[in-house]
Image: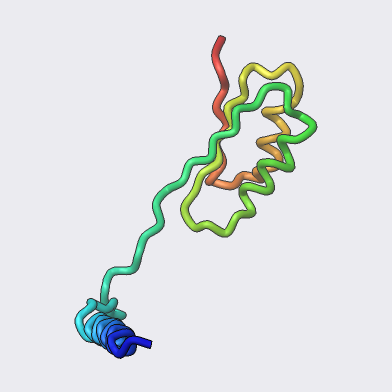
Length: 104
């Protein structure tokens, strides 16, 4: 085996070690007094037309999410069934829910 190979391997490990130490010492850290991170608003749009069979479960499931900042928008596209009523009932007056009526 060539005597240069162990030297190259040792040099690579030294470079890796120096990189790790410099990252530890020089990278900025978050302080407890820094501003808390805010979560962006996520809008979930459900286009619905004659979805009475499934809309209640869908709305309830989405409103049960643990993400902190979201809204559920149901676009009722002139349904001929009870889609709008069932979606509103499933929301149970949750302020994150909004029903939008589609136009012709």
